[in-house]
Length: 462
Image 1 (cartoon, helix red, strand yellow):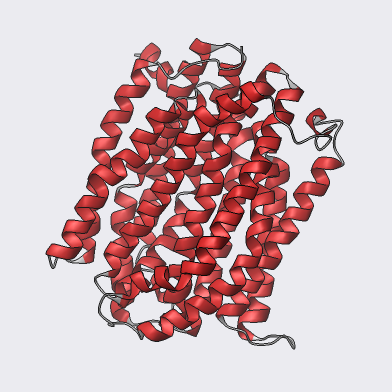
Image 2: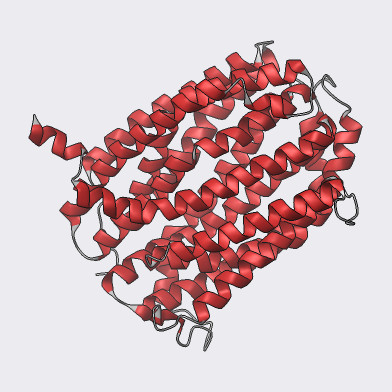
Protein backbone atom coordinates (compact mmCIF):
# COMPACT_ATOMS: atom_id res chain seq x y z
CA UNK A 1 0.00 0.00 0.00
CA UNK A 2 2.77 2.41 0.95
CA UNK A 3 4.57 1.60 -2.29
CA UNK A 4 1.44 2.40 -4.31
CA UNK A 5 0.99 5.70 -2.50
CA UNK A 6 4.65 6.62 -3.14
CA UNK A 7 3.83 6.69 -6.86
CA UNK A 8 1.52 9.64 -6.24
CA UNK A 9 2.92 11.24 -3.10
CA UNK A 10 6.51 12.48 -2.84
CA UNK A 11 8.69 13.06 0.20
CA UNK A 12 9.32 16.36 1.97
CA UNK A 13 12.27 17.21 -0.30
CA UNK A 14 10.08 16.69 -3.37
CA UNK A 15 7.41 19.15 -2.23
CA UNK A 16 10.03 21.64 -1.10
CA UNK A 17 11.50 21.57 -4.61
CA UNK A 18 8.07 21.87 -6.25
CA UNK A 19 7.02 24.76 -4.04
CA UNK A 20 10.29 26.59 -4.73
CA UNK A 21 9.26 26.65 -8.40
CA UNK A 22 5.50 26.97 -8.08
CA UNK A 23 4.97 29.37 -5.17
CA UNK A 24 6.62 32.42 -6.81
CA UNK A 25 4.47 31.79 -9.89
CA UNK A 26 1.37 31.35 -7.73
CA UNK A 27 2.10 34.56 -5.87
CA UNK A 28 2.65 36.50 -9.09
CA UNK A 29 -0.44 35.08 -10.78
CA UNK A 30 -2.45 35.37 -7.59
CA UNK A 31 -1.71 39.03 -7.03
CA UNK A 32 -2.13 39.77 -10.74
CA UNK A 33 -5.54 38.09 -10.80
CA UNK A 34 -6.55 39.59 -7.47
CA UNK A 35 -5.73 43.07 -8.73
CA UNK A 36 -7.59 42.23 -11.95
CA UNK A 37 -10.53 41.39 -9.69
CA UNK A 38 -10.23 44.75 -7.93
CA UNK A 39 -9.83 46.44 -11.33
CA UNK A 40 -12.95 44.65 -12.52
CA UNK A 41 -14.87 45.66 -9.39
CA UNK A 42 -13.79 49.30 -9.84
CA UNK A 43 -15.03 49.32 -13.44
CA UNK A 44 -18.15 47.49 -12.25
CA UNK A 45 -18.82 50.32 -9.83
CA UNK A 46 -19.32 52.67 -12.79
CA UNK A 47 -22.05 50.60 -14.39
CA UNK A 48 -23.06 47.40 -16.18
CA UNK A 49 -22.36 48.75 -19.69
CA UNK A 50 -18.82 49.82 -18.77
CA UNK A 51 -18.12 46.44 -17.16
CA UNK A 52 -19.50 44.55 -20.17
CA UNK A 53 -17.61 46.65 -22.73
CA UNK A 54 -14.29 46.23 -20.95
CA UNK A 55 -14.96 42.52 -20.47
CA UNK A 56 -15.56 41.98 -24.18
CA UNK A 57 -12.37 43.82 -25.20
CA UNK A 58 -10.35 41.88 -22.64
CA UNK A 59 -11.63 38.68 -24.23
CA UNK A 60 -10.05 39.85 -27.52
CA UNK A 61 -6.81 40.87 -25.77
CA UNK A 62 -6.81 37.41 -24.18
CA UNK A 63 -6.53 35.89 -27.67
CA UNK A 64 -3.52 38.12 -28.42
CA UNK A 65 -1.87 37.26 -25.09
CA UNK A 66 -2.20 33.53 -25.63
CA UNK A 67 -0.84 33.84 -29.16
CA UNK A 68 2.25 35.44 -27.61
CA UNK A 69 2.50 32.60 -25.08
CA UNK A 70 2.04 29.99 -27.80
CA UNK A 71 4.50 31.63 -30.17
CA UNK A 72 7.24 31.50 -27.56
CA UNK A 73 6.32 28.15 -26.05
CA UNK A 74 8.14 26.10 -28.69
CA UNK A 75 11.37 27.96 -28.03
CA UNK A 76 10.68 27.65 -24.30
CA UNK A 77 10.75 23.85 -24.49
CA UNK A 78 14.28 24.04 -25.88
CA UNK A 79 15.29 26.77 -23.41
CA UNK A 80 14.45 24.56 -20.41
CA UNK A 81 16.31 21.60 -21.88
CA UNK A 82 19.34 23.66 -22.97
CA UNK A 83 19.50 25.10 -19.46
CA UNK A 84 19.24 21.62 -17.96
CA UNK A 85 22.20 20.58 -20.10
CA UNK A 86 24.21 23.76 -19.31
CA UNK A 87 24.34 25.11 -22.89
CA UNK A 88 24.20 28.93 -22.67
CA UNK A 89 24.53 29.44 -26.42
CA UNK A 90 21.41 27.35 -26.94
CA UNK A 91 19.53 29.56 -24.47
CA UNK A 92 20.69 32.67 -26.38
CA UNK A 93 19.45 31.23 -29.65
CA UNK A 94 16.01 30.42 -28.24
CA UNK A 95 15.79 33.92 -26.74
CA UNK A 96 16.47 35.47 -30.15
CA UNK A 97 13.82 33.26 -31.68
CA UNK A 98 11.32 34.60 -29.13
CA UNK A 99 12.21 38.18 -30.10
CA UNK A 100 11.45 37.55 -33.77
CA UNK A 101 8.22 35.74 -32.99
CA UNK A 102 7.16 38.49 -30.57
CA UNK A 103 7.64 41.17 -33.24
CA UNK A 104 5.60 39.24 -35.81
CA UNK A 105 2.71 38.55 -33.41
CA UNK A 106 2.70 42.14 -32.16
CA UNK A 107 2.30 43.63 -35.65
CA UNK A 108 -0.29 41.03 -36.63
CA UNK A 109 -2.30 41.64 -33.44
CA UNK A 110 -2.24 45.42 -33.83
CA UNK A 111 -3.34 45.13 -37.46
CA UNK A 112 -6.34 42.95 -36.57
CA UNK A 113 -7.47 44.95 -33.53
CA UNK A 114 -7.09 48.33 -35.26
CA UNK A 115 -8.99 47.34 -38.39
CA UNK A 116 -11.53 44.82 -37.06
CA UNK A 117 -11.92 45.74 -33.38
CA UNK A 118 -15.41 47.22 -33.65
CA UNK A 119 -16.69 44.32 -35.75
CA UNK A 120 -15.38 41.81 -33.22
CA UNK A 121 -16.89 43.63 -30.23
CA UNK A 122 -20.28 43.76 -31.96
CA UNK A 123 -20.37 39.95 -32.14
CA UNK A 124 -20.85 39.90 -28.35
CA UNK A 125 -23.75 42.35 -28.43
CA UNK A 126 -26.13 40.38 -30.60
CA UNK A 127 -28.26 38.96 -27.78
CA UNK A 128 -31.09 40.64 -25.90
CA UNK A 129 -30.51 43.96 -24.16
CA UNK A 130 -31.48 42.70 -20.71
CA UNK A 131 -29.12 44.10 -18.10
CA UNK A 132 -27.94 47.15 -20.07
CA UNK A 133 -27.64 49.18 -23.28
CA UNK A 134 -25.61 47.42 -26.04
CA UNK A 135 -24.81 50.72 -27.80
CA UNK A 136 -23.25 52.12 -24.64
CA UNK A 137 -21.35 48.88 -24.04
CA UNK A 138 -19.91 49.17 -27.56
CA UNK A 139 -18.86 52.78 -27.00
CA UNK A 140 -17.12 52.02 -23.71
CA UNK A 141 -15.48 48.94 -25.18
CA UNK A 142 -14.00 50.87 -28.10
CA UNK A 143 -12.77 53.66 -25.79
CA UNK A 144 -10.99 51.03 -23.70
CA UNK A 145 -9.53 49.23 -26.75
CA UNK A 146 -7.96 52.37 -28.27
CA UNK A 147 -5.86 52.91 -25.15
CA UNK A 148 -5.06 49.33 -24.13
CA UNK A 149 -3.27 48.74 -27.47
CA UNK A 150 -0.41 50.99 -26.33
CA UNK A 151 0.52 48.43 -23.67
CA UNK A 152 0.91 45.46 -26.05
CA UNK A 153 4.63 46.07 -26.93
CA UNK A 154 5.57 46.08 -23.24
CA UNK A 155 3.60 42.88 -22.68
CA UNK A 156 5.51 41.12 -25.47
CA UNK A 157 8.92 42.19 -24.13
CA UNK A 158 8.02 41.08 -20.60
CA UNK A 159 7.04 37.63 -21.86
CA UNK A 160 10.31 37.21 -23.77
CA UNK A 161 12.42 37.99 -20.72
CA UNK A 162 10.24 36.55 -17.96
CA UNK A 163 9.63 33.24 -19.74
CA UNK A 164 13.34 32.78 -20.37
CA UNK A 165 14.19 33.53 -16.74
CA UNK A 166 11.59 31.03 -15.51
CA UNK A 167 12.83 28.34 -17.88
CA UNK A 168 16.30 28.92 -16.44
CA UNK A 169 14.97 28.39 -12.90
CA UNK A 170 14.63 32.10 -11.99
CA UNK A 171 11.00 32.46 -10.90
CA UNK A 172 11.40 35.05 -8.12
CA UNK A 173 12.40 38.06 -10.26
CA UNK A 174 9.41 37.81 -12.64
CA UNK A 175 7.26 37.43 -9.53
CA UNK A 176 8.66 40.61 -7.95
CA UNK A 177 8.26 42.53 -11.19
CA UNK A 178 4.69 41.32 -11.41
CA UNK A 179 4.02 42.40 -7.83
CA UNK A 180 5.27 45.93 -8.49
CA UNK A 181 3.29 46.02 -11.73
CA UNK A 182 0.00 45.08 -10.16
CA UNK A 183 0.46 47.56 -7.32
CA UNK A 184 1.09 50.31 -9.89
CA UNK A 185 -1.96 49.14 -11.83
CA UNK A 186 -4.14 49.16 -8.74
CA UNK A 187 -2.99 52.64 -7.69
CA UNK A 188 -3.52 54.22 -11.09
CA UNK A 189 -6.86 52.44 -11.47
CA UNK A 190 -8.09 54.19 -8.35
CA UNK A 191 -6.63 57.53 -9.42
CA UNK A 192 -7.71 57.51 -13.05
CA UNK A 193 -11.03 55.65 -13.00
CA UNK A 194 -12.55 57.79 -10.23
CA UNK A 195 -10.40 60.95 -10.57
CA UNK A 196 -8.86 61.00 -7.08
CA UNK A 197 -6.20 63.40 -5.71
CA UNK A 198 -6.43 65.82 -8.63
CA UNK A 199 -6.22 63.21 -11.41
CA UNK A 200 -8.84 63.36 -14.19
CA UNK A 201 -11.86 61.06 -13.93
CA UNK A 202 -11.44 58.92 -17.04
CA UNK A 203 -13.61 55.85 -16.33
CA UNK A 204 -12.81 52.92 -18.63
CA UNK A 205 -10.09 54.96 -20.39
CA UNK A 206 -8.42 55.39 -17.00
CA UNK A 207 -8.54 51.63 -16.43
CA UNK A 208 -6.80 51.04 -19.77
CA UNK A 209 -4.19 53.73 -19.09
CA UNK A 210 -3.41 52.21 -15.68
CA UNK A 211 -2.85 48.80 -17.28
CA UNK A 212 -0.48 50.28 -19.88
CA UNK A 213 1.56 52.15 -17.26
CA UNK A 214 1.90 49.02 -15.12
CA UNK A 215 3.09 46.93 -18.06
CA UNK A 216 5.91 49.35 -18.88
CA UNK A 217 6.98 49.39 -15.23
CA UNK A 218 7.11 45.58 -15.22
CA UNK A 219 9.07 45.60 -18.49
CA UNK A 220 11.72 47.96 -17.13
CA UNK A 221 12.20 45.90 -13.97
CA UNK A 222 12.62 42.57 -15.76
CA UNK A 223 14.87 43.88 -18.54
CA UNK A 224 17.15 45.92 -16.26
CA UNK A 225 17.52 43.08 -13.74
CA UNK A 226 18.36 40.53 -16.42
CA UNK A 227 21.12 42.63 -17.98
CA UNK A 228 22.64 43.59 -14.62
CA UNK A 229 22.88 39.95 -13.48
CA UNK A 230 24.80 38.47 -16.35
CA UNK A 231 27.08 36.61 -13.93
CA UNK A 232 24.13 34.64 -12.60
CA UNK A 233 22.65 34.13 -16.07
CA UNK A 234 25.54 33.86 -18.55
CA UNK A 235 23.22 33.65 -21.54
CA UNK A 236 22.98 37.47 -21.34
CA UNK A 237 26.59 37.83 -22.57
CA UNK A 238 26.47 38.70 -26.27
CA UNK A 239 22.71 38.31 -26.34
CA UNK A 240 22.20 41.01 -28.98
CA UNK A 241 25.57 40.66 -30.71
CA UNK A 242 23.61 39.04 -33.50
CA UNK A 243 19.99 38.16 -34.09
CA UNK A 244 20.82 35.20 -36.28
CA UNK A 245 19.69 31.74 -35.16
CA UNK A 246 21.22 28.44 -36.32
CA UNK A 247 19.13 27.18 -39.22
CA UNK A 248 18.86 23.64 -37.87
CA UNK A 249 17.62 24.88 -34.47
CA UNK A 250 15.19 27.28 -36.15
CA UNK A 251 13.72 24.37 -38.06
CA UNK A 252 13.40 22.29 -34.90
CA UNK A 253 11.72 25.10 -32.95
CA UNK A 254 9.30 25.83 -35.80
CA UNK A 255 8.40 22.15 -36.12
CA UNK A 256 7.82 21.86 -32.38
CA UNK A 257 6.55 25.38 -31.80
CA UNK A 258 4.17 25.99 -34.70
CA UNK A 259 1.58 23.53 -33.36
CA UNK A 260 1.77 25.36 -30.02
CA UNK A 261 1.23 28.76 -31.64
CA UNK A 262 -1.67 27.44 -33.70
CA UNK A 263 -2.99 25.67 -30.61
CA UNK A 264 -2.94 28.79 -28.44
CA UNK A 265 -4.61 30.81 -31.18
CA UNK A 266 -7.31 28.22 -31.75
CA UNK A 267 -7.80 27.63 -28.02
CA UNK A 268 -8.02 31.32 -27.09
CA UNK A 269 -10.22 32.16 -30.07
CA UNK A 270 -12.30 29.12 -29.18
CA UNK A 271 -12.76 30.44 -25.64
CA UNK A 272 -13.71 33.82 -27.11
CA UNK A 273 -16.25 32.03 -29.32
CA UNK A 274 -17.63 30.19 -26.29
CA UNK A 275 -18.14 33.54 -24.55
CA UNK A 276 -19.92 34.77 -27.66
CA UNK A 277 -22.23 31.75 -27.47
CA UNK A 278 -23.12 32.63 -23.88
CA UNK A 279 -23.64 36.26 -24.93
CA UNK A 280 -26.58 35.10 -27.08
CA UNK A 281 -28.49 34.88 -23.79
CA UNK A 282 -28.25 38.68 -23.42
CA UNK A 283 -26.08 41.48 -22.08
CA UNK A 284 -26.99 40.43 -18.54
CA UNK A 285 -25.35 37.06 -19.15
CA UNK A 286 -22.25 38.83 -20.51
CA UNK A 287 -22.02 40.81 -17.26
CA UNK A 288 -22.58 37.71 -15.11
CA UNK A 289 -19.97 35.75 -17.07
CA UNK A 290 -17.52 38.59 -16.58
CA UNK A 291 -18.01 38.50 -12.80
CA UNK A 292 -17.79 34.71 -12.66
CA UNK A 293 -14.70 34.44 -14.87
CA UNK A 294 -12.84 37.22 -13.06
CA UNK A 295 -13.33 35.54 -9.68
CA UNK A 296 -12.66 32.10 -11.15
CA UNK A 297 -9.27 33.40 -12.39
CA UNK A 298 -8.29 34.14 -8.78
CA UNK A 299 -9.00 30.55 -7.70
CA UNK A 300 -7.33 28.75 -10.61
CA UNK A 301 -3.90 30.24 -9.90
CA UNK A 302 -2.91 27.02 -8.12
CA UNK A 303 -3.26 24.66 -11.05
CA UNK A 304 -2.04 27.23 -13.59
CA UNK A 305 1.19 27.67 -11.62
CA UNK A 306 1.51 23.90 -11.30
CA UNK A 307 1.20 23.57 -15.07
CA UNK A 308 4.18 25.90 -15.49
CA UNK A 309 6.01 23.97 -12.76
CA UNK A 310 5.41 20.71 -14.65
CA UNK A 311 6.92 22.16 -17.83
CA UNK A 312 9.97 23.51 -15.98
CA UNK A 313 10.71 20.59 -13.63
CA UNK A 314 9.94 17.77 -16.06
CA UNK A 315 11.58 19.63 -18.97
CA UNK A 316 14.84 20.05 -17.06
CA UNK A 317 14.87 16.37 -16.04
CA UNK A 318 14.32 15.33 -19.66
CA UNK A 319 17.10 17.66 -20.82
CA UNK A 320 19.44 16.08 -18.26
CA UNK A 321 18.61 12.62 -19.63
CA UNK A 322 16.74 11.46 -16.49
CA UNK A 323 13.80 9.94 -18.34
CA UNK A 324 12.43 7.58 -15.68
CA UNK A 325 12.80 10.21 -12.96
CA UNK A 326 10.90 12.64 -15.18
CA UNK A 327 8.01 10.16 -15.52
CA UNK A 328 7.84 9.46 -11.79
CA UNK A 329 8.03 13.14 -10.96
CA UNK A 330 5.28 13.95 -13.43
CA UNK A 331 2.89 11.42 -11.85
CA UNK A 332 3.34 13.02 -8.43
CA UNK A 333 2.94 16.51 -9.91
CA UNK A 334 -0.33 15.54 -11.63
CA UNK A 335 -1.75 14.09 -8.40
CA UNK A 336 -0.72 17.11 -6.35
CA UNK A 337 -2.21 19.51 -8.92
CA UNK A 338 -5.62 17.82 -8.83
CA UNK A 339 -5.71 17.68 -5.01
CA UNK A 340 -4.72 21.35 -4.74
CA UNK A 341 -7.41 22.45 -7.19
CA UNK A 342 -10.06 20.35 -5.43
CA UNK A 343 -9.38 22.24 -2.19
CA UNK A 344 -9.57 25.60 -3.94
CA UNK A 345 -12.80 24.54 -5.67
CA UNK A 346 -14.49 23.91 -2.30
CA UNK A 347 -13.50 27.39 -1.12
CA UNK A 348 -14.83 28.94 -4.33
CA UNK A 349 -18.17 27.15 -3.96
CA UNK A 350 -18.53 28.32 -0.37
CA UNK A 351 -17.83 31.96 -1.24
CA UNK A 352 -19.73 32.09 -4.56
CA UNK A 353 -22.76 34.02 -3.19
CA UNK A 354 -20.55 36.70 -1.63
CA UNK A 355 -18.32 38.07 -4.42
CA UNK A 356 -21.03 39.22 -6.88
CA UNK A 357 -22.40 41.56 -4.17
CA UNK A 358 -19.30 43.74 -4.70
CA UNK A 359 -20.56 44.79 -8.14
CA UNK A 360 -22.88 47.68 -8.92
CA UNK A 361 -25.35 45.72 -11.02
CA UNK A 362 -28.81 44.12 -10.75
CA UNK A 363 -29.68 41.38 -8.27
CA UNK A 364 -30.54 39.04 -11.17
CA UNK A 365 -27.04 39.40 -12.63
CA UNK A 366 -25.47 38.82 -9.20
CA UNK A 367 -27.50 35.64 -8.67
CA UNK A 368 -26.62 34.32 -12.14
CA UNK A 369 -22.92 35.04 -11.57
CA UNK A 370 -22.98 33.06 -8.29
CA UNK A 371 -24.55 30.02 -9.97
CA UNK A 372 -22.01 30.18 -12.82
CA UNK A 373 -19.19 30.28 -10.25
CA UNK A 374 -20.46 27.10 -8.59
CA UNK A 375 -20.47 25.26 -11.93
CA UNK A 376 -16.94 26.48 -12.72
CA UNK A 377 -15.73 25.33 -9.29
CA UNK A 378 -17.25 21.87 -9.74
CA UNK A 379 -15.15 21.32 -12.85
CA UNK A 380 -11.94 22.87 -11.51
CA UNK A 381 -10.19 19.53 -10.71
CA UNK A 382 -10.96 18.33 -14.25
CA UNK A 383 -9.50 21.51 -15.73
CA UNK A 384 -6.46 21.16 -13.47
CA UNK A 385 -5.77 17.63 -14.67
CA UNK A 386 -6.18 18.62 -18.32
CA UNK A 387 -3.86 21.61 -17.88
CA UNK A 388 -1.12 19.55 -16.19
CA UNK A 389 -1.50 16.85 -18.84
CA UNK A 390 -1.06 19.47 -21.57
CA UNK A 391 2.22 20.69 -20.04
CA UNK A 392 3.41 17.12 -19.50
CA UNK A 393 3.05 16.30 -23.18
CA UNK A 394 4.58 19.65 -24.15
CA UNK A 395 7.66 19.23 -21.93
CA UNK A 396 8.81 16.34 -24.13
CA UNK A 397 8.14 18.20 -27.36
CA UNK A 398 4.95 16.34 -28.31
CA UNK A 399 3.48 19.54 -29.64
CA UNK A 400 1.33 18.04 -32.39
CA UNK A 401 -0.28 15.75 -29.84
CA UNK A 402 -0.88 18.69 -27.49
CA UNK A 403 -2.44 20.57 -30.40
CA UNK A 404 -4.92 17.75 -31.03
CA UNK A 405 -5.47 17.23 -27.30
CA UNK A 406 -6.16 20.87 -26.53
CA UNK A 407 -7.60 22.75 -29.50
CA UNK A 408 -8.72 19.64 -31.35
CA UNK A 409 -11.01 18.64 -28.50
CA UNK A 410 -12.24 22.20 -28.03
CA UNK A 411 -13.25 22.77 -31.65
CA UNK A 412 -14.43 19.21 -32.36
CA UNK A 413 -16.58 18.70 -29.26
CA UNK A 414 -16.93 21.68 -26.90
CA UNK A 415 -17.65 24.48 -29.37
CA UNK A 416 -20.21 22.55 -31.45
CA UNK A 417 -22.00 21.72 -28.17
CA UNK A 418 -22.08 25.39 -27.15
CA UNK A 419 -23.12 26.53 -30.62
CA UNK A 420 -26.05 24.13 -30.81
CA UNK A 421 -27.23 24.93 -27.29
CA UNK A 422 -26.99 28.70 -27.80
CA UNK A 423 -28.61 28.86 -31.24
CA UNK A 424 -31.17 26.05 -31.23
CA UNK A 425 -32.35 25.81 -27.62
CA UNK A 426 -33.59 28.16 -24.91
CA UNK A 427 -31.55 26.42 -22.21
CA UNK A 428 -30.60 28.47 -19.14
CA UNK A 429 -26.97 29.75 -19.25
CA UNK A 430 -26.12 27.79 -16.08
CA UNK A 431 -27.26 24.48 -17.54
CA UNK A 432 -25.59 25.45 -20.79
CA UNK A 433 -22.27 25.87 -18.95
CA UNK A 434 -22.77 22.56 -17.17
CA UNK A 435 -23.26 20.73 -20.48
CA UNK A 436 -20.35 22.52 -22.17
CA UNK A 437 -17.91 21.89 -19.30
CA UNK A 438 -18.91 18.21 -19.17
CA UNK A 439 -17.20 17.70 -22.53
CA UNK A 440 -13.85 18.17 -20.75
CA UNK A 441 -14.30 14.73 -19.16
CA UNK A 442 -13.63 13.18 -22.58
CA UNK A 443 -10.42 15.17 -22.81
CA UNK A 444 -9.34 13.97 -19.35
CA UNK A 445 -9.74 10.34 -20.33
CA UNK A 446 -7.68 10.81 -23.50
CA UNK A 447 -5.02 12.75 -21.58
CA UNK A 448 -4.72 10.03 -18.93
CA UNK A 449 -4.11 7.38 -21.59
CA UNK A 450 -1.47 9.47 -23.39
CA UNK A 451 0.48 10.30 -20.23
CA UNK A 452 0.34 6.71 -18.96
CA UNK A 453 1.88 5.39 -22.20
CA UNK A 454 5.00 7.52 -21.54
CA UNK A 455 5.88 8.24 -25.16
CA UNK A 456 6.08 11.96 -24.36
CA UNK A 457 9.26 11.54 -22.25
CA UNK A 458 11.95 12.52 -24.78
CA UNK A 459 15.33 14.28 -24.52
CA UNK A 460 15.45 16.65 -27.50
CA UNK A 461 18.84 18.31 -26.89
CA UNK A 462 21.11 15.29 -26.54
